[in-house]
Length: 109
Image 1: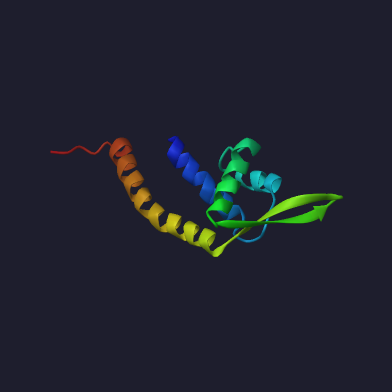
Image 2: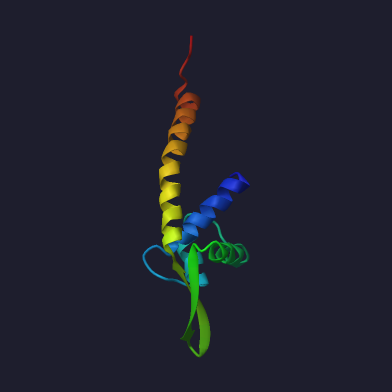
């Protein structure tokens, strides 16, 4: 998969993991990993970038005597997901065209 596309998918996937409830790093990885391969070394720079862009906010909660960072999606993060979904419809049309041409074996005059 193209690196830029993968990068964009990872960012939106991280935001989507936070869409219904706040979460922390390890859980975000578990939520995303069935769909995209992601490691801690990939996740945390994405989280910092999304925080810097105001797509999510961060707060700490004590858990087992230690502070755990939780991430919360912002309105801008929700808007980023909506933008992705609307743009993806166009990408899917192009994908279907390419797939149909290649797999469908259509012949042109």
